[in-house]
Length: 321
Ligand SMILES: NC(=O)c1ccc[n+]([C@@H]2O[C@H](COP(=O)([O-])OP(=O)(O)OC[C@H]3O[C@@H](n4cnc5c(N)ncnc54)[C@H](OP(=O)(O)O)[C@@H]3O)[C@@H](O)[C@H]2O)c1
Image (cartoon, rainbow, N blue to C red; front, side):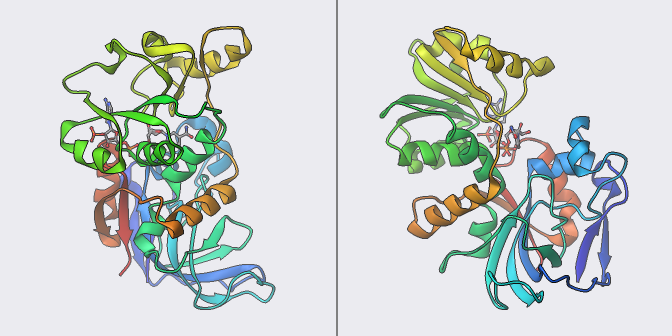
């Protein structure tokens, strides 16, 4: 049994790999899960560091609420509490919470009040666990934006955990999608069915001479002001980042004004709804998560280092097998 623990906020150096940590008794509403795999994602990096500071209101003000890092998991139920009805021993399950679940451990005790669902048949643990964090932010935000049918959309950061989901959701919904990423990742985008790819190392997409109904910056590298010239009248801009000095909140707050180009900043919510949507799309084969590297749990510090570079392509898996 492996547990990734820490006592304080910090970098990956505060993490300890511990073996054979004792488990507490199962409460009536809890499950014991043999974790097959989890990921290291950008949310985990914030949970590890305790940043931004306002986030500590949810994850622990002075010290981390969960000793173990980890916000998602996929695994098998091995024991259930007396009052559990929705799950049985042997069920394959996956779950995510943006405030963390302490799931960087091979055996996890978790309350059924947390967002957990059964993994659809024939969907692997790895595909399931990579359809949680990025999927939630993409789907939750995207479903709050009303787009006209067949809109022209540009996605910057299209190879990230969030971007790669957004691209697939937009294409599933019949929109025409242009994506911005490094040239070596054009192949991934073309497989998704995008109509055009732009290499940000060669071309500045904010200076294109054609415009879009919707510009989505999934890595927060642009700004509303820079993207205004590539927005159609009534065009919308969103970003996954708050922007310098939280400027994106300001632009979103004044979006009720009769401006012809506006910014929206959808706040992610309703994780169970996102997991259920991921379940449906995985089962129907309409969504395939983008998977980058896979690390063994003992190398989790390396995984954190890599994810913090901002260069991962989709999702980074941590395996406990
Ligand atoms: N709003 C929220 O609630 C929320 C929640 C979670 C995360 N976030 C933020 O959302 C952002 C995206 O998260 P994520 O997990 O999807 O990111 P990620 O997976 O770490 O994104 C990595 C991708 O970003 C691309 N990239 C790097 N620099 C770029 C640039 N200058 N222009 C275009 N693409 C670039 C890279 O593509 P190439 O390899 O093709 O270069 C890489 O594939 C992060 O900044 C994160 O902090 C926001």
